[in-house]
Image 1 (cartoon, one colour):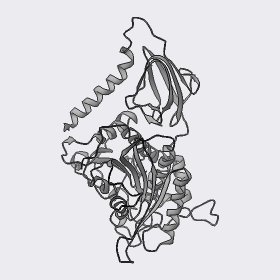
Image 2 (cartoon, rainbow, N blue to C red):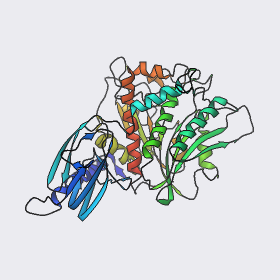
Image 3 (spheres, rainbow, N blue to C red):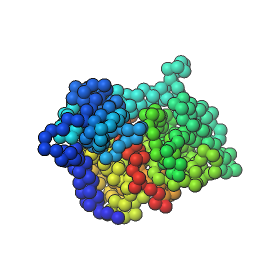
Image 4 (tube, one colour):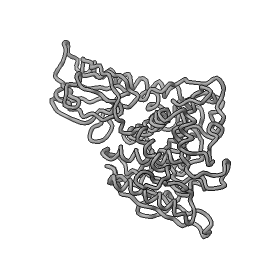
Length: 460
């Protein structure tokens, strides 16, 4: 158990050690140019680096290559968490991943440096693609090739609109090559109450003894539901998170994972986390296995109305990323917290101390007194109210991503929770695309780094 200050200091020292490794490993008196790096089949110094994209690299010779936290090295389909590769008269290849927030960086090749400037690219997890998919799902028209009209997704028995949407979402995962199932559980005898119907996509890992996952709930607040009377699009809560999972599935197709991984769309979150609980506590062949270690879970619920978008009064919308479990508010207890903080502060270079002159409207986390004016509310917390609780209760380390909520988003659980309203609230389509893209990249990077962090383990 470590204090927050000591953890931060430790991470900084590790980063400094990593970034300096290439300078001091050779011990030679003169320059060593035995190590050659090509990016996209071009000398590294001459290559074009596009933000948000994967770039092929080939490294040959003897020496050490080190990249800063704002660039990720991918070898054999997995992140090299140290950011450093050492070769001894050998050759290797892989990918360099440049997040959309990286404008420039320095690559260290032994005692040489390569300064790179990035240009706009086509991000593998894209706010533009997210918006286009959201528009298709929520729009209603006479041409089914132009709009899906996958609305009215409240969970009930029966609701043909929900069944139709679940089939569409399942088809997306199946089309990408995932082992996909629709999990239906009749967990009660009252036909007037919702049952559970989830979409579960599995990606098998190298290690058969562990499991991990990401998820979002695809159901929306039913008619008459508090506090706003229910909704029909549920654009923010939670079509936004649903579409993010569709994009994550696409980005992870060619990645290798350490543990068996589920990418899930839950039902009945609005009725008490019934869908994720059905997956976690039943014994079906594609349910959560009970003979494997459940290491971590990342949850996406109500996203896109957050920094860097601003309110009409000029204040930034709040951004929340909460890890857990959190038993002591004064210390970081979970290894996944370090991954979450590293991604936000060091990889994506989010403004750590950004505040507003005042406070936000909702204070449901246990650090409210110290964070009430903070734009970035990124820390361990006890906050519940979504499907991460199901897995936290089983000992998994969890991260929950959330934007504005309750008092900060007046359309919560109301008929006005539409994509058009989200656009209006944040001040335009481009602002919404930028906001959702940032949080999606945070979650995506957390996942691929946590996947390669052995110290993350079940704490139950």
